[in-house]
Length: 182
Ligand code: NI
Image (cartoon, rainbow, N blue to C red; front, side, top):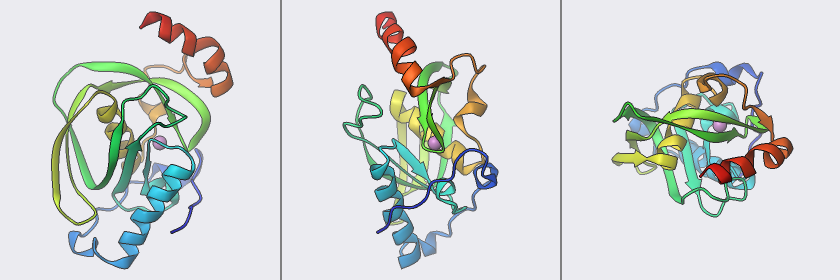
């Protein structure tokens, strides 16, 4: 296992569409190693998810996990999931604004509208079919990571950039406000 270098905004790889993974290749050492490295890298940097695109590999693979994450202290838990060839389909027109950050856009947060309920279809690391309904924060993370696999970052989804903040300023000016509003 290895901690991989994460591409930052401006690296052209983040704007490319990742290639679909041949399901027959999922058990191979190369794909399994990539999955292990994605998990280790996500955990090292306290990400809620990480897409292969972000580690300079244009394959449709992402990992998600939220478990007592210091970057998202109030987020509901999301168990570790490996998403191979994920397809996310909105199940509602309802969107909710929520704060997001991204390991490829370090030290920043912004309010991003996301569908509150989506269907997630993908394969797991054993090549088994996954077909689940994801809601709220889990739905948000799925949308964020699948966007990466399609060459998009959360900034593209913001209605405008007026909430875009450095983390220090976000803690000072936005976090308290948000909690009062809730
Ligand atoms: Ni991201």
